[in-house]
Length: 195
Image (cartoon, rainbow, N blue to C red; front, top):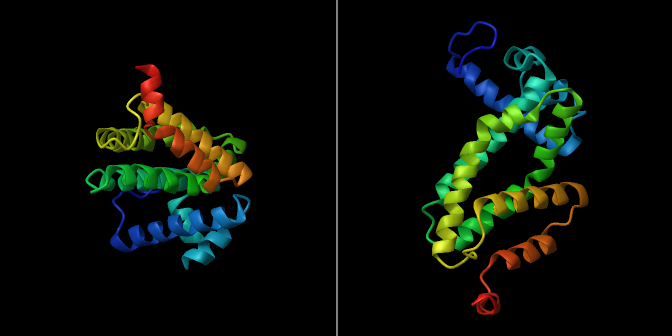
């Protein structure tokens, strides 16, 4: 990681401060929305406003970094779950966690759009890793018989996007997740009807 101003590698204390700012920003924006001030982010992180702007010269660059960090963290979590003892539980648990974080991701994405920043650039950097890790979780869950074999990664990503949008907008979560999960699970009657 290099300094945006000098291009030199960040010192250990600067890396810690950057991580604190990102964590605080995610929390502040999740609770207060993206209209929350960078001063509030600095307060929550326990750093001065100058430290925030040294790492993120604009609020938009901070929002973009929050989105990238969130997607990278989700990809890392999915990657760790690839070796879980229960592939079905790992897949459905990960799906639930992604949906539970949807409001933060959605708020950040919308704020970037309002500022004229294309969130696809941030998603483009972190998205492929998330898609690959989710695809591996899906494959393992299918091999274990926990998820229907006729469901592909593209369908799961679309369902995940739709569920995340619904959770962020309507707040419907547990009941809607249960219905979606029931649709993803193998059903003996469904297999017999096709056979």
